[in-house]
Figure: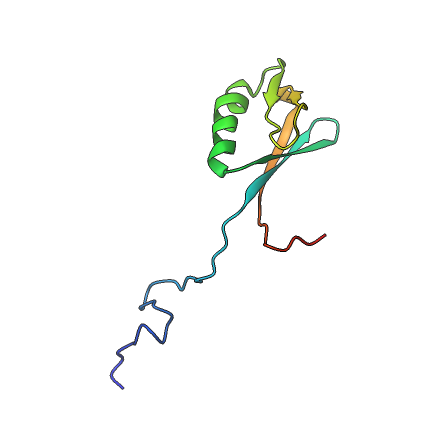
Length: 105
């Protein structure tokens, strides 16, 4: 054999290209965990990462040291809203949430 690689044998990848799964998953939504001063934790959900980034860069980041309240969007719960002081946010964790056709509890 002379070193010729058949792309069918490598899943379509040639040398130097990473193999990608044809079953790659896409998140259904993103859970954003907000760690607040005093040990409180809140979770809010965003449909897309861009939606979270828009809220973060437009609402939270510019007022990071402010003690004025800002609104945190809660889209999954009708009639309920949350406000917080940006200066009290200690950390944020963004977690992709994958839903399947069969929900497991």
